[in-house]
Length: 222
Image (cartoon, rainbow, N blue to C red):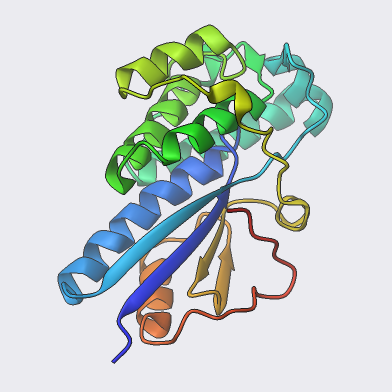
């Protein structure tokens, strides 16, 4: 009986819904492991550059969102929505500390470099640290010095980092938004879905063979 579950996740570090979605995914994975302790589960994280046009130095955070949403009031309303959703999964976000809306290419390159060095759980911890650095501490994820400090904290050897190609982004995913969760390449859920919906998708797909073909509209990055 097939008992392998592959979960592919599309994300960008500037997206608070991706962090919220990660928390929901971890909740769902815990519940799934309790129900199916013998199942083999692999989570594959796929970098998505939502806004590849962001310059290397980034943009002023407040000005960017006001321009994007049209007014300071609209920004406040959107941020309040995000804060409430984050708190529902035990996360706190401090928008007031974020000064720079970063270009995340360097951060995604760090993740690509670290993937070969870290276990799945250690990689998840690094990813979590990057989200915390940005959304709670207001650190600039486009700053190589900040990224090097985070990498050191996770014992990531930076030798050879410069040889990692820039994350190209997944244009099909970016057009539809992130996060994306695909289960054994059969079913895809978009957005920061609650744990119970992610768990239901896991239950529905874990006994099916991993599809050779990717779902329509998706492009996969190794």
